[in-house]
Image (tube, rainbow, N blue to C red):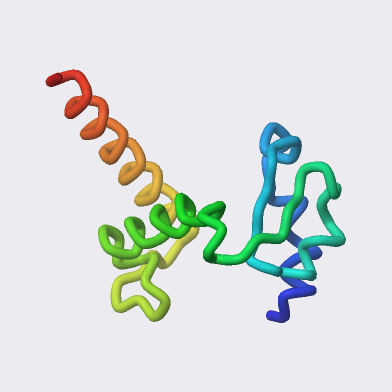
Length: 103
């Protein structure tokens, strides 16, 4: 799938509450035409504006085999793929909350 094709399908997949948030991408020109200039900014990797998302993507790939680019483990249905992700996010946040409350 080309970046233009992916960009055309992206806006419908973004929840309404997130559409009004500040967005950054690493010079994905196809996305620049989809978002308002006030909320969207093209940035380089060295700007430190995308590192939080990059870190989260790396965490997902390390902990969930389903998110590796060529997975050996995969979900046969979208339902179980999403369920696995939701369970991971719950556990991840719960562990962080426990670590904070110990201080």
